[in-house]
Length: 575
Image 1 (cartoon, rainbow, N blue to C red):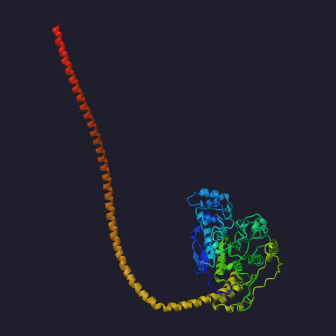
Image 2: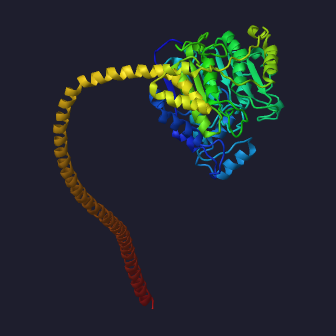
Image 3: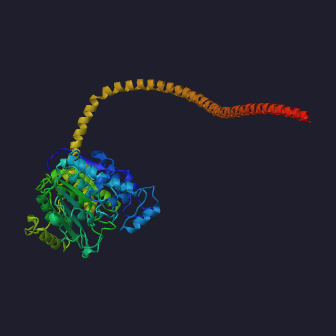
C-alpha cells in the first residue's frame, strides 16, 4: 500500500431510510438517527464524500439473514411494520434487553444488514478497494434468536456468512472480524464460536463482567470451541484504575492483533466500527481520540512497528509495511454516541481508506498499569494456537513526539505555518492532529493542483467549442420556446376536447341508464302478455270442452225426452 499513488476506490453507503428507526414517542436516546446524519454531513462538508463511490442502501433477503439468525427471529423483526399496532411493538420491546421499536424499525434493520452485505460483496468482487457502511441500528450484540443492546440483526455476521456460504466464487475463505466497539460483541462471538474460517477479535471494556452486556462471555479465556478453538480473541479492559486510550489500544494491536493477523492471513477484513470508546462518549468511559482510531485502522491495513515517527525534515518515516487481505476492508458502524467525536472519527478513518498512507505520528501518552499484564495474559492463553504470541515481549519505552516543529513547518505550504504554530503553542490536541493530517495531505494537494492545471488547459482548448455550443443552445432555446407555446395551445385544445368528451360520456351514461330502465319495463310487459295469452288459450280450450259436453247432454236430454213421450203414449193406450 505504501508508496503507491493510485487513488483507491472507497465506497460510502448511506440511506436516509435508516433514520426512520426511532423511539416510539420521540424521547431522547443515545442510539438516535442523528448519529448517522452527523457522520454523513461531516463527510459531505469535508469533500470526502465526493471522492468516494456513494451507494444507497438495499434490504437484506430473509435467506441471507437466516444464515446466522433463526427463522422465528427474522419473522419477528419483519413483523415490526407500520401496519402493526404500537402496543404490540412496545410489548415485544419490553421483553427484550435494551431495545426500542417503532414503525420504521423493521425497514431500518433490513436495510442496515443488507447494506453491509452489499458493501462487503463489492469489496470482495474488487469493484471497490474498501468501504464504510454508515448503518443503524447496530448489530454486534444481536444473537441468533434475540435482539439486544440496540441491535436487531447482526449486520457484520450476516455479511461474513454471506461471503463464505453464498458466494464461494469470490474466493473468500478466511475472514478477520475486528470489533473495536467499547462493548463486547457477544452476538458475533457466538455465531462463529465453532467456525475456524472466521477469526473474531474484540477489544472491549469488561470490568470483571459488570459492564454491558455483562457476564463472562467477554473474558480472554473464551477462545472458541471444537474446530473454532483459538479463533476467538477477547481483550477485556478493567477501568477501575483509569481510562484506557490510544496507547493502550495500539499496544494491543501491536502485540496481539497484528501478529495473529499475519499468521491467519485473512482474505477480507470486516470491522465492527463502534466509536463509543472515544473520549467523551456518554456510555464508554474510555479516551480514544479520532487520531487513535485512524492509527488503529492503518495498522489493520498494514503491519507496522507500533510507532512511526519523522526522522528528518524530508518527511521520511520508518515503517515495515505489509498489506493484509490485499487492502480489502469493510467498516460497518456499530456504537458511538457523542455525535461530534463519532463524526470526526469516521472522517479520519475515511481519509485513511482513501489516501492509503502510513501513519505519520507517534502516540505520546502512556498506557495504564494494567495494560501490559493484560496483554501478556491474553498472549499466554492464545499462544498454543498462535506461535507468534509465544515469544516474550521486549517492552520498549515510547519515543517522545518530535519536539522541533520548525523542522517540519518549512515543508508545508506557507499559508498554513502560522495556524499550525499557533495551535501547537496553545497545546490544542485537535490542532496537533490537524497539523499532522496536513503533513500527509500536502502531497495529495500538490498532485490535485497539477491535475487541476492540466484540466484548466484542456478547458481553455474547449472554450471555442463551448461558444459554438452556446450559440446552438440559444437557437435551440428559441425553438424550444416556440414549441412550448404550441404545446400550450395544443394542451388548451385538449382540455376543451376533454370537457366535451366528459359531457358526451355523461349523456351516454344517462341514455344507457334510461335504455336499461325501458328494456326492463318492456320485458315485464312482454312477460305479462305471454302469461295472458297462455291463460286465454287455456280458457278457450275449457270453454270448447264445456260446449261439447253441453251438446252431448242436450243430445241425451232429447233422447230422454223422446223416450218419455213414447212412454206417455203407451200409458194413454193402456188406459
